[in-house]
Each structure stands twice: as C-alpha cells, then as structure tokens.
Length: 487
Image 1 (cartoon, rainbow, N blue to C red):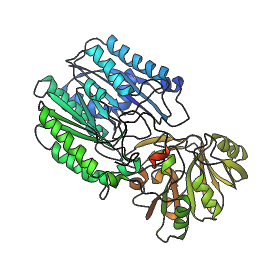
Image 2: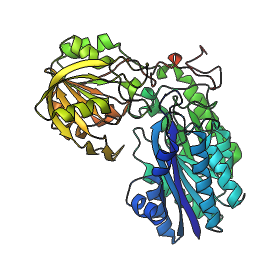
Image 3: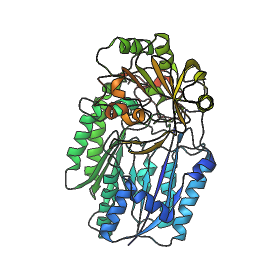
Image 4: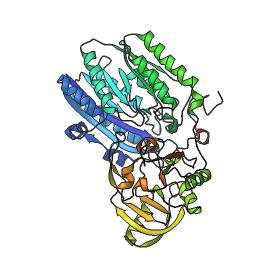
C-alpha cells in the first residue's frame, strides 16, 4: 500500500493585529525525506502514524508539513500557496491508497473561514471518493461540517494540555488498515452545542468540567461498534461560524449509533454550560493576594496574553501592578520586546539599564512600562520543556533577565508560552524559590507547574485572548451562543 502523509498545523487568532507573512509560511515547510526523518523521531501525530505504517509494511509518500506559528489571520495568498503546494505534490506522487494529514483545525485566512476543510476538499478532489483520508485534530479544533464531509475520519486528541498526538496518529493507521481490508466502514456524526468555552475551562483534570465529559466520551468509545469519539473544546480566538465545542462520533457503519452518541455528549455539554464560566481575579486583587499569601509560589496566569493563543506576548498590566506595590520575590515571564532586549544586550551583563518595555504591538495589552534594574542574564533563549505535553525545544530568541530589585523581568525577542519550570531554570531562576511567578499561558501552567505552585490565580488582565468573551469583536460566529448570549 502507498500512503501519503503530511501536516497543515496552521492556526490563527482572528482578532490579533499581527499577521503571518507568506515568506514565514514558506520557511516553515518540511518536505520529502527531511519531513519523514525529522517528524518520525518526534511524538506528534505524524510520528504515530508512521509507526503504524511501518507495522503494516506500507510505503510512505511524503507530502509537506506546514507549521508557520500562531499570529493573526493567515494571508489568503499564504493559504492558497500552502494548499496548492500540498495537493500538487500529491498529484505528482501518482495514485495512493490512503492519505493521513495532521491538522490543527483552526486555520482562518482573509477569505477562507475554514482553511482545514478547504484543504481536505482539495485532497479529496485528487484522490477520489473511495480513498481513505484520515485527519488528526488538535483538541482546540473548531470542527466544521465540511471537514467531516471531506475526511473519511477525524480523530481528535483526548488530553489538555495535549500529549497524546502520537497515540492518535497510531490509531489513524490502525483504522486505515481496517479500511484497506474492508473490515470497517467509518460513519461520522458531528454535533455542536450552542456554546463557545473560554480556553481556561478546557483543562482536563479532576474537578474541571471537561474531565467529566471526557469520561463520558471514553465510556461511549469503549463500545466495539465505535471507532472513535472525539470531544473538541474549540479555539474561541479563531472565529468561524462553527467556533466552539463540538463532538465527532465515528462508528463502524452504524449511522444511528453515531448520531445518538454525538447528540448525547452534545446535550451533556450543554447541561454543564454554566460550569464553563471563566474564573478570573482582577489585576489589582490578584497582585494584592499574591503579595499577602503564605502559600507560595503563587502562580499568576496572564491568560489574556498567552503565548499559546496568538497574542503578542507584551502585555504589561501585571508587571505594572507588581512594581506599583513594590512586590518582592516576583518573576514576570515574560515580556516580548525585541527592542528592549537589544538595548539590554548592548549595555551588557552587570550593567544598570532604564528601559521602556512591552505594550508596543497594539493597544489591547497594556501601556509600555518603565523599568530600571541590573542586566543579570543574557541567553540565546533556547530551552527544552520537561513535560509530556507541549514537549520539545523552544526558541524565545535572545532573552534577557533584568533584576529590578523585588521583580525579575524576563524579556524575550519572541512571544513564548510560559508554562513549566525549565522556562525559568534555563535562565538561572529556580521557580520554587520565588514567591510570585507570572506565566503567559491559558491553562498549561496549571499542569506544568503543579509540583511547584502552591496557589494558582488566573488574572483578568487585558488582551486579545481575554477569557471574558463578550469583550471580543465577534462577527461571524453563529448566534445565539453561550456565553455571548443569555441562553
């Protein structure tokens, strides 16, 4: 069997002002043997699928893997270039028996609300109606009817923070093998409650609403007639009509069962919709509580300026409040400001600098803040996460630590998700020895710092990933929808 494999991990914060360029999109592409060699050694969905392909003795046809990062909407020319590059390689490869694609499920361009469905449709045009196309999805995918219609099967990850991509890829290979020998005939049902949850509440852990719903999905998936049940939390900052939580239930040729399962889980989600209200504390109260707390370290989540949600990473509201109250033992991780980094590097380690940091990308993430302190560390910004989720090597760009007395400010050249201990330790900061840790993340910091943090407070700071959805300028999402509407 000849099976084509590739990835389109493209996503967008449609409210963000920063844009991906076509050049950056093109630079991100892995192709051919380079793609197979590099991704085959990883723990992503492509790696899991490749492991399954080897077990079945298939010949792999390398397409492309596109991973340009997360900013604002994708320029239409970038999406069209990516799609045409992808499908032209598929055409040139000749007939294939199946296609596997790793998707994020949240790509939006200037004129295409559903880039993922558009890509799957183009693949379907090339391979025909009878060739299996299986796609894996990130747990934040905004699933559309077009995606369900064009793919033979969609399989989402079941963890958040996500760490089961490889398992999902391997599952895809197993189902594809069963499709090849005609022992299964997937039928998918898609259902969506009228709700769009904040990212904070998609954490899958005991006591959180998604944990109960995932247990229900796993129970229904245990039926031998069922191939998969995926509950996708959605990505509210990537707007399309279908943005929000959805269910895809896939059975072996039993449409009625698939519909029944999808509808049951949809109804269970709806009945718990009020549990998905974000739990936030004002900037002033959060900082005051952190300073007064004896249960330290206190982890302050800057959830509105998360490095995982396409915001600029230069929000300053929490930093400004910490300085205002003369906080001690605090670390702000981090402020993305390449200009301030260059100034600090120019002054050198040990020098005293006066900088104006953050708040320079747009008007949504706070005003620039003046700081004064000693340049303690200059670092290349590279570190490796020590968690099973969001694993891998991170490149923050040149990174500087400025010690402002009671507050250490981490300045980076690039916005970065801040969620685990090595982010701090790589810079000579032991997080367990600090009183306050500021993390730009929507939920990953709760798992990544679970063994260090004693108190977790998510802060209602300004930003284009605010968990108060009514503050965002939605225009295309279906209405009415909870919590934007009182239903």
